[in-house]
Image 1 (cartoon, rainbow, N blue to C red):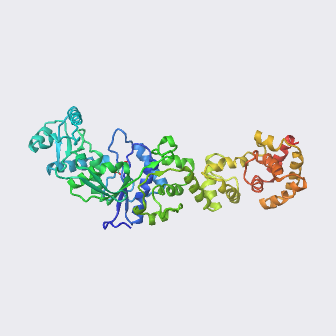
Image 2: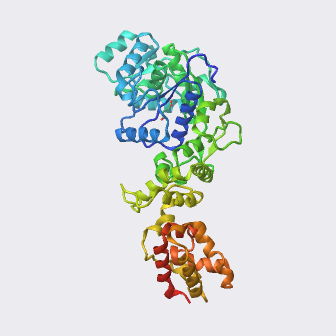
Image 3: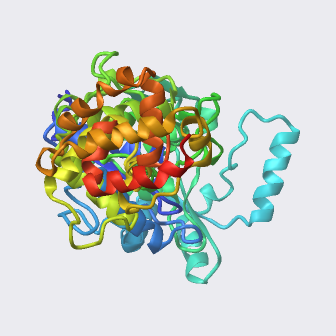
Length: 496
Ligand code: GLU
Protein backbone atom coordinates (compact mmCIF):
# COMPACT_ATOMS: atom_id res chain seq x y z
CA UNK A 1 0.00 0.00 0.00
CA UNK A 2 1.08 3.55 -0.55
CA UNK A 3 2.11 5.52 2.55
CA UNK A 4 0.48 8.63 1.12
CA UNK A 5 -2.43 9.34 3.46
CA UNK A 6 -4.65 10.68 0.70
CA UNK A 7 -6.65 8.16 -1.27
CA UNK A 8 -4.59 7.14 -4.24
CA UNK A 9 -5.56 8.81 -7.50
CA UNK A 10 -3.38 8.18 -10.52
CA UNK A 11 -3.73 8.93 -14.16
CA UNK A 12 -2.48 7.73 -17.49
CA UNK A 13 -2.37 10.69 -19.85
CA UNK A 14 -1.46 9.66 -23.38
CA UNK A 15 -1.09 12.21 -26.15
CA UNK A 16 -3.05 10.99 -29.16
CA UNK A 17 -0.22 11.72 -31.54
CA UNK A 18 0.12 8.07 -32.45
CA UNK A 19 -0.97 4.62 -31.44
CA UNK A 20 -0.59 3.23 -27.95
CA UNK A 21 2.90 1.76 -27.95
CA UNK A 22 4.64 -0.68 -25.69
CA UNK A 23 6.20 1.99 -23.45
CA UNK A 24 2.89 3.81 -22.99
CA UNK A 25 1.12 0.54 -22.28
CA UNK A 26 3.64 -0.33 -19.59
CA UNK A 27 3.10 3.12 -17.99
CA UNK A 28 -0.66 2.54 -18.15
CA UNK A 29 -0.27 -0.90 -16.55
CA UNK A 30 1.82 0.47 -13.68
CA UNK A 31 -0.74 3.21 -13.01
CA UNK A 32 -3.65 0.79 -13.22
CA UNK A 33 -1.99 -1.78 -10.99
CA UNK A 34 -0.91 0.85 -8.47
CA UNK A 35 -4.48 2.18 -8.28
CA UNK A 36 -5.93 -1.30 -7.91
CA UNK A 37 -3.38 -2.45 -5.31
CA UNK A 38 -4.13 0.65 -3.23
CA UNK A 39 -7.91 0.62 -3.72
CA UNK A 40 -7.47 3.93 -5.48
CA UNK A 41 -8.80 5.52 -8.63
CA UNK A 42 -7.34 5.09 -12.10
CA UNK A 43 -8.01 7.99 -14.42
CA UNK A 44 -7.53 8.12 -18.16
CA UNK A 45 -6.95 11.56 -19.57
CA UNK A 46 -6.33 12.45 -23.18
CA UNK A 47 -3.55 15.02 -23.49
CA UNK A 48 -4.46 16.37 -26.90
CA UNK A 49 -3.26 19.93 -26.63
CA UNK A 50 -0.84 19.54 -29.50
CA UNK A 51 -3.36 20.25 -32.25
CA UNK A 52 -0.99 19.59 -35.11
CA UNK A 53 -0.24 16.04 -34.08
CA UNK A 54 -3.30 14.87 -32.11
CA UNK A 55 -6.14 13.13 -33.89
CA UNK A 56 -9.54 11.74 -32.94
CA UNK A 57 -8.61 8.52 -34.70
CA UNK A 58 -5.55 8.07 -32.50
CA UNK A 59 -7.70 8.66 -29.42
CA UNK A 60 -10.11 5.98 -30.59
CA UNK A 61 -7.26 3.55 -31.20
CA UNK A 62 -5.73 4.27 -27.78
CA UNK A 63 -9.05 3.62 -26.00
CA UNK A 64 -9.51 0.40 -27.97
CA UNK A 65 -5.99 -0.75 -27.06
CA UNK A 66 -6.62 0.09 -23.38
CA UNK A 67 -9.78 -2.00 -23.49
CA UNK A 68 -7.95 -4.88 -25.13
CA UNK A 69 -5.30 -4.69 -22.41
CA UNK A 70 -8.14 -4.92 -19.89
CA UNK A 71 -7.04 -1.73 -18.14
CA UNK A 72 -10.41 -0.44 -17.03
CA UNK A 73 -10.41 3.19 -15.98
CA UNK A 74 -12.62 4.63 -13.26
CA UNK A 75 -12.78 8.12 -14.66
CA UNK A 76 -12.14 9.33 -18.17
CA UNK A 77 -13.50 9.26 -21.69
CA UNK A 78 -16.60 7.13 -22.17
CA UNK A 79 -17.04 6.59 -18.42
CA UNK A 80 -17.14 10.18 -17.15
CA UNK A 81 -16.38 11.15 -13.57
CA UNK A 82 -16.57 14.09 -11.20
CA UNK A 83 -13.42 15.83 -12.43
CA UNK A 84 -14.08 15.95 -16.16
CA UNK A 85 -13.89 16.72 -18.92
CA UNK A 86 -11.01 14.28 -19.39
CA UNK A 87 -9.81 15.56 -22.72
CA UNK A 88 -7.52 18.56 -22.60
CA UNK A 89 -9.00 20.28 -25.64
CA UNK A 90 -12.30 20.34 -23.76
CA UNK A 91 -10.58 22.09 -20.85
CA UNK A 92 -9.05 25.08 -22.60
CA UNK A 93 -11.22 27.54 -20.68
CA UNK A 94 -10.04 26.01 -17.41
CA UNK A 95 -6.38 26.55 -18.33
CA UNK A 96 -7.08 30.06 -19.52
CA UNK A 97 -8.80 30.92 -16.27
CA UNK A 98 -6.00 29.38 -14.21
CA UNK A 99 -3.31 31.26 -16.16
CA UNK A 100 -5.10 34.58 -15.84
CA UNK A 101 -5.65 33.99 -12.16
CA UNK A 102 -1.89 33.56 -11.77
CA UNK A 103 -1.32 36.82 -13.66
CA UNK A 104 -3.78 38.52 -11.36
CA UNK A 105 -1.97 37.19 -8.32
CA UNK A 106 1.37 38.35 -9.67
CA UNK A 107 2.65 34.79 -10.09
CA UNK A 108 2.70 34.94 -13.86
CA UNK A 109 3.04 37.77 -16.36
CA UNK A 110 2.47 38.72 -19.96
CA UNK A 111 5.47 38.55 -22.23
CA UNK A 112 5.60 40.50 -25.48
CA UNK A 113 9.03 39.43 -26.67
CA UNK A 114 9.05 38.45 -30.32
CA UNK A 115 10.62 35.14 -31.40
CA UNK A 116 13.42 37.16 -33.03
CA UNK A 117 14.18 38.98 -29.80
CA UNK A 118 14.16 35.72 -27.85
CA UNK A 119 16.56 34.16 -30.34
CA UNK A 120 18.89 37.18 -30.20
CA UNK A 121 18.86 37.14 -26.38
CA UNK A 122 19.71 33.47 -26.37
CA UNK A 123 22.56 33.92 -28.80
CA UNK A 124 23.99 36.78 -26.75
CA UNK A 125 23.81 34.68 -23.55
CA UNK A 126 25.64 31.86 -25.28
CA UNK A 127 28.32 34.19 -26.60
CA UNK A 128 29.09 35.63 -23.21
CA UNK A 129 28.94 32.15 -21.64
CA UNK A 130 26.32 33.28 -19.18
CA UNK A 131 25.64 30.45 -16.70
CA UNK A 132 21.96 31.38 -17.03
CA UNK A 133 20.80 30.63 -20.53
CA UNK A 134 17.06 30.93 -19.97
CA UNK A 135 14.63 33.73 -20.72
CA UNK A 136 16.20 36.95 -19.36
CA UNK A 137 12.93 38.01 -17.68
CA UNK A 138 12.65 41.04 -19.98
CA UNK A 139 8.89 41.51 -19.49
CA UNK A 140 8.82 40.54 -15.85
CA UNK A 141 9.08 44.10 -14.71
CA UNK A 142 6.54 45.70 -16.99
CA UNK A 143 3.98 47.26 -14.63
CA UNK A 144 0.85 45.09 -14.64
CA UNK A 145 -1.46 47.92 -15.80
CA UNK A 146 0.83 48.66 -18.73
CA UNK A 147 0.99 45.00 -19.68
CA UNK A 148 -2.77 44.67 -19.40
CA UNK A 149 -3.28 47.72 -21.64
CA UNK A 150 -0.99 46.19 -24.27
CA UNK A 151 -2.93 42.93 -24.11
CA UNK A 152 -6.22 44.81 -24.37
CA UNK A 153 -4.79 46.54 -27.40
CA UNK A 154 -4.41 43.19 -29.10
CA UNK A 155 -0.64 42.92 -28.87
CA UNK A 156 0.64 39.37 -29.37
CA UNK A 157 1.76 37.87 -26.08
CA UNK A 158 2.49 34.75 -24.16
CA UNK A 159 2.10 34.18 -20.43
CA UNK A 160 5.14 33.23 -18.40
CA UNK A 161 5.37 31.87 -14.90
CA UNK A 162 7.25 34.01 -12.41
CA UNK A 163 9.79 31.74 -10.78
CA UNK A 164 10.67 33.34 -7.40
CA UNK A 165 14.17 34.79 -7.69
CA UNK A 166 15.19 33.26 -4.38
CA UNK A 167 13.67 29.85 -5.17
CA UNK A 168 17.04 28.10 -5.17
CA UNK A 169 17.61 24.56 -6.39
CA UNK A 170 14.53 22.43 -6.89
CA UNK A 171 14.55 18.96 -5.42
CA UNK A 172 12.09 16.50 -6.87
CA UNK A 173 11.36 13.56 -4.63
CA UNK A 174 11.00 10.56 -6.84
CA UNK A 175 10.07 7.13 -5.52
CA UNK A 176 12.23 5.43 -8.10
CA UNK A 177 15.12 7.84 -8.57
CA UNK A 178 15.33 9.24 -5.05
CA UNK A 179 15.88 12.99 -4.66
CA UNK A 180 16.72 14.60 -7.97
CA UNK A 181 18.25 18.07 -7.74
CA UNK A 182 17.68 20.63 -10.47
CA UNK A 183 19.88 23.70 -10.32
CA UNK A 184 18.19 27.07 -9.84
CA UNK A 185 19.94 28.52 -12.88
CA UNK A 186 18.35 25.90 -15.09
CA UNK A 187 14.93 27.30 -14.24
CA UNK A 188 13.63 30.26 -16.12
CA UNK A 189 10.30 32.00 -16.38
CA UNK A 190 8.94 29.53 -18.87
CA UNK A 191 5.85 29.97 -21.02
CA UNK A 192 2.62 28.54 -19.64
CA UNK A 193 0.37 29.98 -22.33
CA UNK A 194 1.34 30.37 -25.95
CA UNK A 195 0.51 33.35 -28.13
CA UNK A 196 -2.07 31.24 -29.98
CA UNK A 197 -4.06 30.88 -26.76
CA UNK A 198 -3.13 27.27 -25.99
CA UNK A 199 -1.51 26.11 -22.77
CA UNK A 200 1.87 24.42 -22.73
CA UNK A 201 2.16 20.80 -21.64
CA UNK A 202 3.86 21.65 -18.34
CA UNK A 203 1.03 24.00 -17.40
CA UNK A 204 -2.01 22.03 -18.61
CA UNK A 205 -0.72 18.85 -17.00
CA UNK A 206 -0.26 20.46 -13.62
CA UNK A 207 -3.60 22.27 -13.72
CA UNK A 208 -5.25 18.93 -14.51
CA UNK A 209 -3.25 16.85 -12.08
CA UNK A 210 -3.94 19.25 -9.25
CA UNK A 211 -7.63 19.76 -10.07
CA UNK A 212 -8.11 16.03 -10.49
CA UNK A 213 -6.47 15.36 -7.14
CA UNK A 214 -3.72 13.19 -8.58
CA UNK A 215 -1.62 11.85 -5.71
CA UNK A 216 1.05 9.96 -7.67
CA UNK A 217 2.41 10.79 -11.09
CA UNK A 218 3.77 7.61 -12.60
CA UNK A 219 5.20 8.20 -16.07
CA UNK A 220 8.16 7.65 -18.33
CA UNK A 221 11.47 9.09 -17.20
CA UNK A 222 11.66 11.14 -20.38
CA UNK A 223 9.47 13.49 -18.31
CA UNK A 224 11.84 13.72 -15.35
CA UNK A 225 13.37 16.86 -16.84
CA UNK A 226 9.90 18.50 -16.96
CA UNK A 227 9.36 17.88 -13.28
CA UNK A 228 11.06 21.01 -11.82
CA UNK A 229 9.00 23.23 -14.13
CA UNK A 230 5.86 21.41 -13.14
CA UNK A 231 6.79 21.85 -9.49
CA UNK A 232 7.00 25.60 -10.09
CA UNK A 233 3.44 25.50 -11.38
CA UNK A 234 2.23 23.55 -8.34
CA UNK A 235 3.87 26.11 -6.12
CA UNK A 236 2.32 29.00 -8.02
CA UNK A 237 -1.10 27.35 -7.87
CA UNK A 238 -0.50 26.68 -4.19
CA UNK A 239 -1.37 23.03 -4.60
CA UNK A 240 0.37 20.01 -3.09
CA UNK A 241 3.04 18.42 -5.25
CA UNK A 242 2.20 14.78 -5.96
CA UNK A 243 4.60 11.92 -5.42
CA UNK A 244 6.59 11.30 -8.58
CA UNK A 245 7.63 7.94 -9.97
CA UNK A 246 9.54 8.13 -13.22
CA UNK A 247 9.89 4.75 -14.81
CA UNK A 248 12.78 3.73 -17.00
CA UNK A 249 12.87 3.55 -20.73
CA UNK A 250 12.35 0.31 -22.56
CA UNK A 251 15.32 -0.68 -24.69
CA UNK A 252 15.58 -2.96 -27.68
CA UNK A 253 17.92 -5.97 -27.57
CA UNK A 254 20.73 -3.78 -28.96
CA UNK A 255 20.55 -1.46 -25.96
CA UNK A 256 19.00 1.39 -27.95
CA UNK A 257 15.62 2.93 -27.13
CA UNK A 258 12.86 0.60 -28.34
CA UNK A 259 11.64 1.75 -31.74
CA UNK A 260 10.15 0.55 -34.99
CA UNK A 261 13.59 -0.69 -36.01
CA UNK A 262 13.23 -3.42 -33.40
CA UNK A 263 9.91 -4.68 -34.77
CA UNK A 264 6.34 -4.13 -33.62
CA UNK A 265 5.95 -1.30 -31.13
CA UNK A 266 2.21 -0.69 -30.99
CA UNK A 267 -0.05 -2.65 -28.68
CA UNK A 268 -2.47 -3.59 -31.41
CA UNK A 269 0.31 -5.08 -33.51
CA UNK A 270 0.83 -7.55 -30.68
CA UNK A 271 -2.91 -8.18 -30.45
CA UNK A 272 -2.98 -8.85 -34.20
CA UNK A 273 0.07 -11.08 -34.03
CA UNK A 274 -1.89 -13.33 -31.68
CA UNK A 275 -0.67 -12.57 -28.18
CA UNK A 276 -3.13 -13.00 -25.34
CA UNK A 277 -3.97 -9.81 -23.56
CA UNK A 278 -3.32 -11.37 -20.14
CA UNK A 279 0.09 -12.65 -21.20
CA UNK A 280 1.02 -9.35 -22.82
CA UNK A 281 0.06 -7.39 -19.70
CA UNK A 282 1.98 -9.87 -17.55
CA UNK A 283 5.05 -9.48 -19.73
CA UNK A 284 4.95 -5.67 -19.85
CA UNK A 285 4.40 -5.47 -16.09
CA UNK A 286 7.70 -7.29 -15.64
CA UNK A 287 9.59 -4.67 -17.62
CA UNK A 288 11.08 -2.88 -14.67
CA UNK A 289 8.98 -4.45 -11.95
CA UNK A 290 8.95 -7.82 -10.30
CA UNK A 291 7.31 -8.97 -7.10
CA UNK A 292 10.49 -10.74 -5.99
CA UNK A 293 13.04 -10.63 -8.78
CA UNK A 294 12.36 -14.11 -10.09
CA UNK A 295 8.64 -14.77 -10.58
CA UNK A 296 7.69 -14.49 -14.23
CA UNK A 297 4.03 -15.43 -14.13
CA UNK A 298 2.05 -12.67 -12.51
CA UNK A 299 -1.63 -12.97 -13.30
CA UNK A 300 -3.62 -9.77 -13.58
CA UNK A 301 -5.22 -10.45 -10.19
CA UNK A 302 -1.87 -10.70 -8.46
CA UNK A 303 -0.65 -7.59 -10.23
CA UNK A 304 -3.75 -5.75 -9.04
CA UNK A 305 -3.13 -6.74 -5.44
CA UNK A 306 0.66 -6.82 -5.15
CA UNK A 307 2.00 -4.10 -7.39
CA UNK A 308 4.15 -1.66 -5.53
CA UNK A 309 6.42 1.16 -6.60
CA UNK A 310 9.08 -0.08 -4.16
CA UNK A 311 9.90 -2.89 -6.51
CA UNK A 312 10.26 -0.79 -9.64
CA UNK A 313 13.80 -0.66 -10.96
CA UNK A 314 15.36 2.55 -12.18
CA UNK A 315 17.48 0.71 -14.72
CA UNK A 316 16.23 0.56 -18.28
CA UNK A 317 14.35 -2.63 -19.10
CA UNK A 318 15.06 -4.64 -22.23
CA UNK A 319 12.24 -5.84 -24.44
CA UNK A 320 12.77 -9.53 -25.04
CA UNK A 321 10.39 -11.14 -27.50
CA UNK A 322 11.54 -14.64 -26.44
CA UNK A 323 10.36 -13.98 -22.92
CA UNK A 324 7.06 -12.61 -24.19
CA UNK A 325 6.63 -15.74 -26.32
CA UNK A 326 7.39 -17.99 -23.40
CA UNK A 327 4.89 -16.18 -21.17
CA UNK A 328 2.28 -16.36 -23.93
CA UNK A 329 2.86 -20.10 -24.20
CA UNK A 330 2.53 -20.50 -20.45
CA UNK A 331 -0.86 -18.77 -20.53
CA UNK A 332 -1.92 -20.92 -23.47
CA UNK A 333 -0.86 -24.13 -21.73
CA UNK A 334 -2.85 -23.10 -18.67
CA UNK A 335 -6.07 -23.16 -20.70
CA UNK A 336 -8.25 -26.23 -20.79
CA UNK A 337 -8.62 -27.85 -24.22
CA UNK A 338 -12.17 -26.64 -24.35
CA UNK A 339 -11.20 -23.07 -23.54
CA UNK A 340 -8.40 -23.19 -26.10
CA UNK A 341 -10.87 -24.47 -28.68
CA UNK A 342 -13.42 -21.74 -27.93
CA UNK A 343 -11.11 -18.80 -27.45
CA UNK A 344 -8.34 -19.50 -29.89
CA UNK A 345 -8.83 -22.40 -32.25
CA UNK A 346 -12.34 -21.83 -33.58
CA UNK A 347 -12.00 -18.04 -33.91
CA UNK A 348 -8.64 -18.38 -35.68
CA UNK A 349 -9.94 -21.05 -38.04
CA UNK A 350 -12.91 -18.82 -38.79
CA UNK A 351 -10.73 -15.81 -39.43
CA UNK A 352 -8.70 -17.91 -41.86
CA UNK A 353 -11.99 -18.94 -43.51
CA UNK A 354 -11.29 -22.60 -42.86
CA UNK A 355 -14.36 -22.79 -40.65
CA UNK A 356 -17.61 -21.23 -41.81
CA UNK A 357 -18.53 -18.15 -39.78
CA UNK A 358 -21.66 -19.31 -38.04
CA UNK A 359 -21.79 -23.05 -38.15
CA UNK A 360 -19.33 -25.54 -36.85
CA UNK A 361 -18.24 -28.25 -39.20
CA UNK A 362 -17.47 -30.61 -36.38
CA UNK A 363 -18.56 -31.78 -32.96
CA UNK A 364 -17.03 -29.88 -30.08
CA UNK A 365 -14.93 -32.91 -29.17
CA UNK A 366 -13.27 -32.69 -32.57
CA UNK A 367 -12.03 -29.22 -31.74
CA UNK A 368 -10.98 -30.35 -28.29
CA UNK A 369 -8.85 -33.12 -29.75
CA UNK A 370 -7.29 -30.67 -32.17
CA UNK A 371 -6.85 -28.24 -29.26
CA UNK A 372 -5.07 -30.88 -27.21
CA UNK A 373 -2.49 -31.50 -29.91
CA UNK A 374 -2.05 -27.89 -31.01
CA UNK A 375 -1.90 -26.28 -27.59
CA UNK A 376 1.71 -27.31 -26.87
CA UNK A 377 2.65 -26.28 -30.41
CA UNK A 378 1.19 -22.78 -30.24
CA UNK A 379 3.28 -19.73 -29.45
CA UNK A 380 0.95 -17.13 -30.92
CA UNK A 381 -2.66 -17.74 -31.80
CA UNK A 382 -2.46 -17.81 -35.61
CA UNK A 383 0.02 -20.70 -35.35
CA UNK A 384 -3.02 -22.99 -35.26
CA UNK A 385 -4.05 -22.05 -38.78
CA UNK A 386 -1.22 -23.55 -40.76
CA UNK A 387 -1.11 -26.55 -38.49
CA UNK A 388 -4.81 -27.26 -39.10
CA UNK A 389 -4.96 -26.61 -42.82
CA UNK A 390 -4.39 -30.27 -43.75
CA UNK A 391 -7.69 -31.12 -42.06
CA UNK A 392 -9.70 -28.87 -44.33
CA UNK A 393 -8.69 -29.82 -47.88
CA UNK A 394 -10.76 -32.96 -48.40
CA UNK A 395 -9.55 -36.22 -49.88
CA UNK A 396 -7.05 -34.73 -52.26
CA UNK A 397 -4.21 -33.01 -50.52
CA UNK A 398 -1.33 -31.34 -52.23
CA UNK A 399 1.82 -33.10 -51.14
CA UNK A 400 4.91 -31.10 -50.30
CA UNK A 401 7.48 -31.98 -52.91
CA UNK A 402 10.49 -32.15 -50.64
CA UNK A 403 8.64 -34.24 -48.09
CA UNK A 404 7.54 -36.65 -50.82
CA UNK A 405 11.11 -37.04 -52.06
CA UNK A 406 12.42 -37.69 -48.59
CA UNK A 407 9.69 -39.98 -47.36
CA UNK A 408 7.67 -41.56 -50.16
CA UNK A 409 9.96 -41.84 -53.17
CA UNK A 410 12.02 -44.39 -51.25
CA UNK A 411 12.39 -48.17 -51.41
CA UNK A 412 9.56 -50.26 -49.95
CA UNK A 413 7.21 -47.40 -49.20
CA UNK A 414 4.43 -49.08 -51.18
CA UNK A 415 4.50 -51.92 -48.67
CA UNK A 416 4.38 -49.42 -45.77
CA UNK A 417 1.37 -47.60 -47.16
CA UNK A 418 -0.37 -50.85 -48.07
CA UNK A 419 0.14 -52.26 -44.59
CA UNK A 420 -0.95 -49.02 -42.98
CA UNK A 421 -4.08 -48.93 -45.09
CA UNK A 422 -4.94 -52.51 -44.22
CA UNK A 423 -4.41 -51.87 -40.49
CA UNK A 424 -6.53 -48.74 -40.59
CA UNK A 425 -9.29 -50.51 -42.47
CA UNK A 426 -9.45 -52.93 -39.60
CA UNK A 427 -10.28 -50.12 -37.14
CA UNK A 428 -14.03 -49.69 -37.13
CA UNK A 429 -15.65 -46.28 -37.50
CA UNK A 430 -16.78 -46.29 -33.90
CA UNK A 431 -13.30 -47.18 -32.71
CA UNK A 432 -11.75 -44.50 -34.87
CA UNK A 433 -9.89 -42.82 -32.06
CA UNK A 434 -6.22 -41.97 -31.72
CA UNK A 435 -5.60 -44.70 -29.19
CA UNK A 436 -7.01 -47.51 -31.29
CA UNK A 437 -5.48 -46.12 -34.46
CA UNK A 438 -2.06 -46.00 -32.80
CA UNK A 439 -2.53 -49.53 -31.50
CA UNK A 440 -3.33 -50.80 -34.99
CA UNK A 441 -0.29 -49.10 -36.52
CA UNK A 442 2.22 -49.78 -33.74
CA UNK A 443 3.33 -53.32 -34.69
CA UNK A 444 3.84 -52.48 -38.37
CA UNK A 445 7.40 -51.08 -38.48
CA UNK A 446 8.73 -54.26 -36.85
CA UNK A 447 6.63 -56.48 -39.04
CA UNK A 448 7.87 -54.65 -42.12
CA UNK A 449 11.38 -54.74 -40.81
CA UNK A 450 11.75 -50.99 -41.06
CA UNK A 451 12.26 -48.07 -38.73
CA UNK A 452 9.44 -46.09 -37.19
CA UNK A 453 10.89 -42.99 -38.79
CA UNK A 454 10.60 -44.45 -42.31
CA UNK A 455 7.20 -46.02 -41.79
CA UNK A 456 5.52 -43.07 -40.13
CA UNK A 457 7.35 -40.65 -42.40
CA UNK A 458 5.71 -42.17 -45.48
CA UNK A 459 2.29 -42.36 -43.85
CA UNK A 460 2.46 -38.85 -42.46
CA UNK A 461 3.34 -37.28 -45.80
CA UNK A 462 0.63 -39.30 -47.57
CA UNK A 463 -2.05 -38.26 -45.11
CA UNK A 464 -0.98 -34.81 -43.95
CA UNK A 465 0.90 -33.68 -47.08
CA UNK A 466 3.93 -32.71 -45.09
CA UNK A 467 6.48 -34.19 -42.75
CA UNK A 468 5.56 -31.83 -39.94
CA UNK A 469 2.11 -32.36 -38.55
CA UNK A 470 0.43 -33.03 -35.24
CA UNK A 471 0.80 -36.59 -33.87
CA UNK A 472 -0.29 -39.36 -36.26
CA UNK A 473 -3.10 -40.94 -34.24
CA UNK A 474 -4.90 -37.66 -33.58
CA UNK A 475 -4.33 -36.44 -37.13
CA UNK A 476 -5.96 -39.58 -38.52
CA UNK A 477 -8.78 -39.45 -36.02
CA UNK A 478 -9.54 -35.85 -36.91
CA UNK A 479 -9.43 -36.54 -40.65
CA UNK A 480 -11.89 -39.39 -40.31
CA UNK A 481 -11.49 -42.87 -41.72
CA UNK A 482 -12.73 -42.37 -45.32
CA UNK A 483 -10.58 -39.33 -45.89
CA UNK A 484 -7.50 -40.94 -44.33
CA UNK A 485 -7.85 -44.02 -46.55
CA UNK A 486 -8.49 -41.95 -49.66
CA UNK A 487 -5.34 -39.94 -49.08
CA UNK A 488 -3.26 -43.09 -48.70
CA UNK A 489 -4.68 -44.31 -52.02
CA UNK A 490 -3.86 -41.03 -53.67
CA UNK A 491 -0.23 -41.19 -52.56
CA UNK A 492 0.22 -44.82 -53.52
CA UNK A 493 1.32 -44.20 -57.13
CA UNK A 494 4.30 -42.20 -55.86
CA UNK A 495 5.43 -44.99 -53.54
CA UNK A 496 8.01 -47.57 -54.59
N1 GLU B 1 0.92 13.39 -22.54
C1 GLU B 1 2.19 13.06 -21.95
C2 GLU B 1 2.81 11.93 -22.74
O1 GLU B 1 2.10 11.24 -23.47
C3 GLU B 1 1.95 12.65 -20.52
C4 GLU B 1 3.07 12.97 -19.65
C5 GLU B 1 2.68 12.88 -18.20
O2 GLU B 1 2.29 11.77 -17.81
O3 GLU B 1 2.76 13.89 -17.53
O4 GLU B 1 3.99 11.72 -22.69
